[in-house]
Image (cartoon, rainbow, N blue to C red; front, side, top):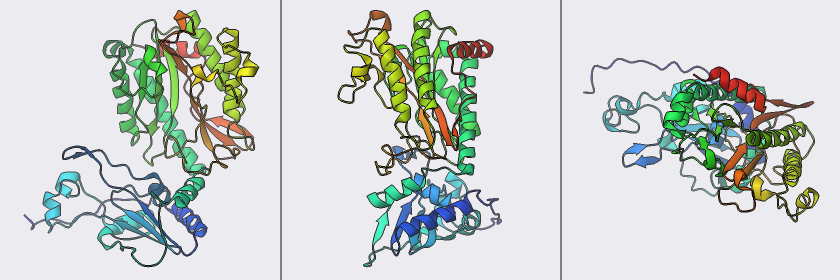
Length: 429
């Protein structure tokens, strides 16, 4: 069994982020002089008995190394970096033949330590040689140390040109996934939310790494549940379907896009009125995005539009101006959530950043954020007219802060009600 095997190498080209990752590690080390920093990739997680979820590395580990293999640990010790990795098993070991997680015959051929090192431009040692760190020197683990986690996330706030390209590619593939779903509309009507979820996932796997988060395919009143991911319902004529979906690219940067579509391909007058209100709020939010303004500028602009719209619909118990007072926010009964979050390698990116920087700080060139206002009228909301109950509408795009304003990375998908109708009519079978 252990004899008669030829030798072959994997073609592992130099990673496009190798040089940038080295510079990132230097900045991280500078923030903690003389200390030992530990950034694990993580390991497999059990899905059911002896089957695991597909592995996806910890974001901080991937950002500072480019590595996507499991069980690796980046150690930055007083500025010097070593990646402790789990390379492929030798063919004279039991692991090669018998191990379901790491054995080549079971899980595929992993790169060697030399191949990982050449690709990532970093010294690589076997993870079995990872030190115990039981000396007196201070060690910080990014998964548990708040200060290290904060600094690591703050370094990821500004995207360089390569990262913006990765996000643009993720948005472009996401647009194709939306188009796939509409082209298959007859099957959508037959099989419901599940068909959209599966159709989009196929595009994500074909052209990217995965979906960036569980797709929300919410027909009818399911759209009023913000994170409806069961995707088990029907898609019914006369109603709307809210699709919040994003592709994660090969280097783990994800899109996050939402469109609300009329199932019949044409909005009813009421649906159009509500949709156009949400679109006006989103456009006001996008228009507010530029360097030097508060991160919350987009949210405040969008909420002002929605509050005045709700006032015009005679739903608010007070004036829009009163409702917008921070002590009131009564409009939030129907808007529910914030308008923006940072976007990057995580769909809700840089979540451990100091609150004084995000969300209470200002936008800067190179940041990427979502703008995604919505209106949600629950099925059992007795404070709204019956014809509004069970309607949920959200429109979301991924916005890059540029030197002179912003750029919509997901602009290839139509947003206006007229453009949505034309797009659906053109694509539907």
